[in-house]
Length: 126
Image 1 (cartoon, rainbow, N blue to C red):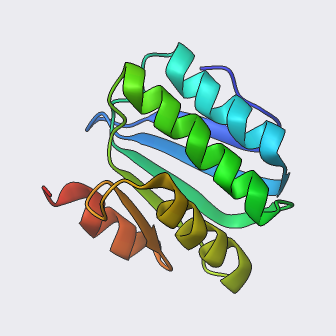
Image 2: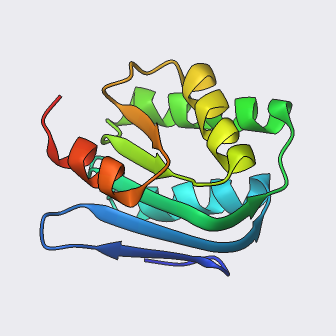
């Protein structure tokens, strides 16, 4: 799968896409990451995003834009459950904002402070 600088994607033995983000990211970086998953045919897979080492340069409107982009993708194909992990307040808050704008129910997108919480959630059927 194509990877943007600072973003790596891996598919584990359970079919879960694991994305690790390290560095500073903008709207364009996040859209490119989603497009890479789409191009690889992996949008329907469960997904864990490790953003514990990420910094986001996003406005509230840009978070809304990303949510709108993923809603459009959902019209064409299902998107798997996604766990977003951020320890720091700002990225955690952006994850919660995305969840509110995304409109999927809480069984489809979860925001967590620890990887253990995210792993437990992603492996537990909705």
